[in-house]
Length: 69
Image (cartoon, rainbow, N blue to C red; front, side, top):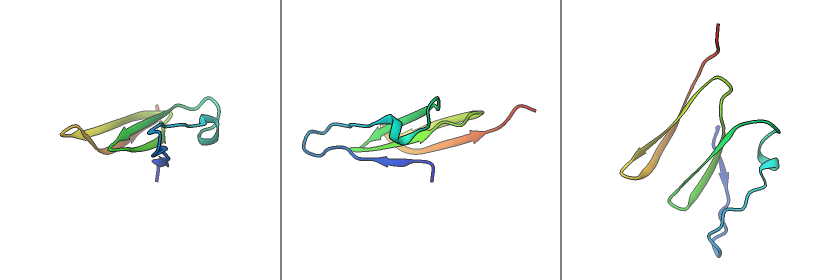
């Protein structure tokens, strides 16, 4: 699964993340937060990533990858 859960501290409601633990150096990534949950995903080198919402909430994250010919 591409999305990794990230812990949000319930007492402070803070998202504290050490980005070096999650991704390799020089990689692009996105953090999506909805309903008190946070998830991190690496973005594809060639392609697009769509965050689909419905009624103000995240429903899914779609990945469409390709490579130049």
